[in-house]
Image 1 (tube, rainbow, N blue to C red):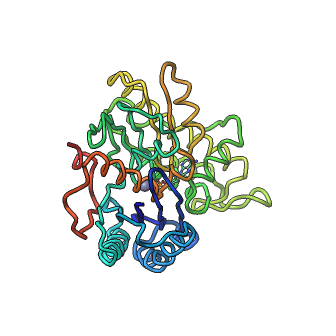
Image 2: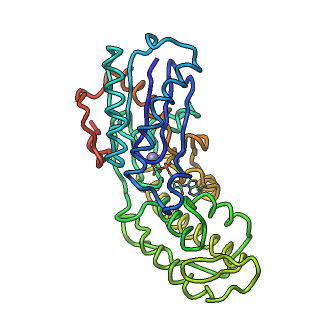
Length: 345
Ligand code: KG4
Ligand code: ZN
């Protein structure tokens, strides 16, 4: 049984994995960071330290196994917030050393790439991984385990970050991405339009869209509240209808920008399988739009496996162990930047 630990950002997650996923637990820090409208790295690291030992004890207790049943610890080594990664790494190495079992460092992005396989075992190589999360946006050709080619990636904000920052601009509390998506889905149309960013360029970019949202909110918001239940934003007040219509336009803008790159990648690579993954893979408009492309198979994980989790880390460790491709470097050192190309054979 593999014990996997994920602590790269604001979720402390553990999983037990035998031949397949046995069970997992996730402790979210959303409430802790909400007052700051974003993740505070130092607070996140302290939270991981506080929560992790209890979470490991709980999952082993719930599985009703002895620690001797564990054959390996797999931990996210990067990329992510350095302090957060260090807590996971130090804990995992110490724990594994006490049990005299190996501890392997796994790449978080590789975890996301393989996450759809947790729920869709029929997903087969080659596939086009559309990895869209709060920290990363990239489209990757996956020819096999450890065989990755980046087709395009963002040069600034990630797609999830664009959702979250735009949500904050229209007065939704952190992390606003899922709330913005729900609000957008509650209306059928919007008078607002956002520019489609980077249409002609090979890279993805979302910072221009964020500026366009800010400009639009500044134009639409009024200094005084127009209705009893108006929404207060940093730019002034929006009516509930304006807020929902802005959410609709923002979601369309982000998804349009992603679709241009996805369709281009499909044409260029001629790969017929798309595996959508990362937090933004939970977005229903994005799923619908990809599903509507003719002639492709679409795979995506369950909602719990779209966002950060330890099951995906365990899965990669298990696949790498089976293939004899476990990383040779067993140091406790973490890597806050660790692109997929660095682990490609
Ligand atoms: O994969 P994840 O948990 O974290 C990173 O590794 O970055 O992704 C979290 C991101 C957040 O930015 C969140 O707003 C976004 O995923 N997200 C969504 C939805 N659910 C989560 N964005 C759009 N629509 C959703 N339904
Ligand atoms: Zn992630």
